[in-house]
Image (cartoon, rainbow, N blue to C red; front, side, top):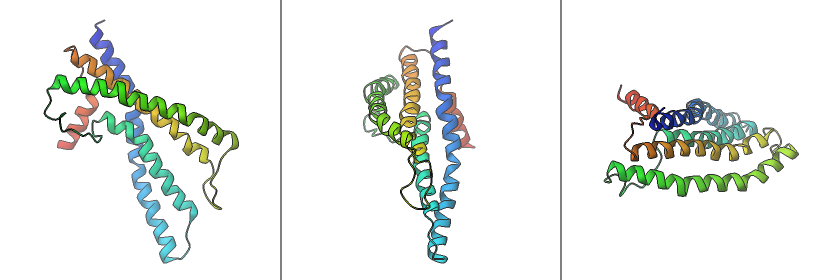
Length: 187
């Protein structure tokens, strides 16, 4: 079995989880808007503020960000300071992606996991809940996203590393997901 095929398949399978979660999380945007809308209506029309709705909005916003960031990276839609990147050759872009992922993204993911682990475990141990009366229970579930975020980013980072290696070696390593997304945008 050719090395390019193996690396391509591994990258493909590493992409699946962040992309499926990202597509699911996109639907949370609708619920976030509804939550904020009903929070405003309850507060200013009926003079009955709802801590539950306010916290639901905060939780959804957190989930959208922390679960959607790997999806954004997978689709190459993340914010990039591309003063040099845009005008660089494809090979230089792949080298930048490889080195940036290896020396910036992966260490940040490791840092987030190592520094969040204890914090999240304490939250689980005490069964942390909202400090507000009428707030959402299970705050430890939300805090667990502090570990899920770097794990998803690491999976996506590994995929980027494998694809960059393939492309730097001149092997074919298409990114089907990015191509599908670009085609959907053109329709």
